[in-house]
Figure 1 (cartoon, rainbow over the protein chains, first blue to last red):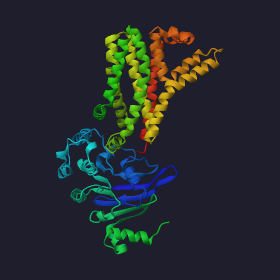
Figure 2 (figure 1 turned 120 degrees about the horizontal axis):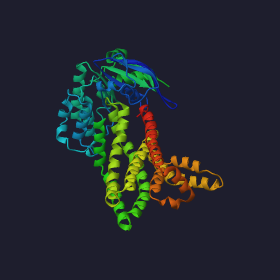
Figure 3 (figure 1 turned 180 degrees about the vertical axis):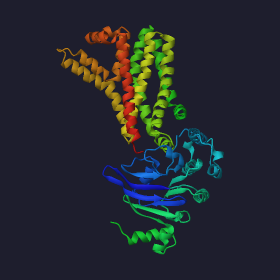
Figure 4 (figure 1 turned 30 degrees about the vertical axis):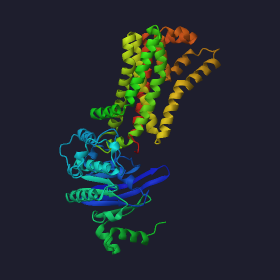
Length: 236
Length: 255
């Protein structure tokens, strides 16, 4: 479980995160949604330690993890646009990360399912966007992390690969992991997520389970439920 | 850390630019030594060329490399690795690759044609120059998010140290020629890594007679062993201080 307390981050005059306090429980697949520029990526990057928050704490297993690099061994990150050293091949990238991490318990389900083994000799420069996303996904799941942060995971993937990834996400959730997905495509989140964290202009509007949302709005589909909430609470 | 350095060096060597740099230096060195009748004169020409090209290529290549590695740095930061380790690995990886290119391009010919104390000093100073300008490049790269601006800053810094600074010092010396400002000139020189390298080398070459009164001042203060040592310490400070400042910034930086 990750507990976020009073997290604030400003970029100059822009307040990207405004006193965010919430909890991300285990065994959850959480959708982090909101309009462009609402602070989703900043929140995800703060948890990852890529962005340094100005104030507040992020507590994981009783420890504040801001500025703590060791915590990252229990987190897997799939960036929105994964870009890698262009001259390296897929095989070299995978070997490099394995070599640097030096961990033994590897989860190679995804690289097997995506048949990355056949592409190991290809350089990153020559890859299509979708194949690059496959590499990112395989890397995120590779070390069996307890927390997974997936930024627009299915964008650019073909339907078969999307299906594989979704299955993998559900499997990991059933193992008790916390999975945070940032996405704009609400329809694809329907069968995946069990909770929704909605952000707007750096503020957290709500963090509710899917059941609560359905009850509140009477809508079954996530996209309709969110749309209804947005219409009933117009924020100027 | 060793592993990351290894991968960075492998990545740089694969890009072939660094090989082109080594070949360019090698061609210049061989041309210079074969054109000049004596190896001493060849070395003198080589010093002038090395002190212009090495800083330029070092600063531009490293700035571009750091910007192009932005995603790679992000990938590393999301792994359980200290930011300090990542940044210093980058520094050492770039430094190792560029110093190697310098040693092959200039070091080898010098060893063949003019293997003496001054030749060895040229190799040491050249490597120190490389390390200095990579360090300055990393400082420029960490402070500017925009790639074009970062590279622009790099080129400006090079231009400043190579041309503008000398013009400024000359202006000062002419304006204050009625006063005794040799100490000031000495301190000013220490503020420019290219100047200090040039003086370190020229004083060893007996070419300082050509530098007039200032040359005599420099000869008196820097021609000695202690002076050479002070010059090298000054160059080391030029390596450590920008690198330390860039590291301090990188540890708190939002990527």
